[in-house]
Image (cartoon, rainbow, N blue to C red):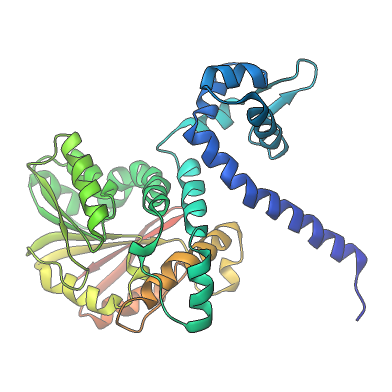
Length: 349
């Protein structure tokens, strides 16, 4: 076998980069949990200063800072021996509602299921969402919440035919697969005349969603209940939403049919899914890489843990989603919005 030395070295450099990034994910989570980024954001500091301000051990902080600087997550001034964050780094690494910290928390949490996922690869069995570490649930909400906050009320809902005006006048809404309820709360805060019910099969997530909603004073117009996407009730609803959830289901067809049953005759189903192209080749990029990786640990195993026979995965793309909606009895389906991380579809009876 003839090996091209140049290509081999390119691959080895890629390997070193990825190993550093993998271990670096833990460093980001540590920096978030110990407040190291927040304390470093206001001024340059030595490891000893940062450790004193955060109540941590200087030698650990020193090694952490070196790794952060090597990875481009902090800056190092060789003349002073101090470390600091640029404005852009500080913005990304100190915002608890931003996608960066949540994304790393989600990744680290997902890897805790490595033994179970390895076994599932051999057996073909599933691993349910509820079987994962709590960092998966918290990290998932933090990762997606930034995009929802930026686009849901300002862009996505206005793109749906007649929905924004209906919400302002007063509409009943079901948010199916709501997780910790970030999407539900955002809609409820923006449309005080409407009422919202968040549904999720994971009881602990439902409890957390209700707690957060009560903390915002939304309890009278928002409730969270335990049920699967195939069994939720309480309709008819003028709007049903699924946020980054349909592709995780073992029976998305059953979910789509249930949505159709629970909608009013002129209701709308808003389907938010991960951004994906129409083919594998179109998804061979950094976003696709991240979504395929999460899908192998979270989405596909969860779908295979359920009845239904589907495992769409996070990069299913538009046509499989359209097919599910059409086969479930929706006569109209269109793409209404897109970001680098999500695509939004509208399905109507």
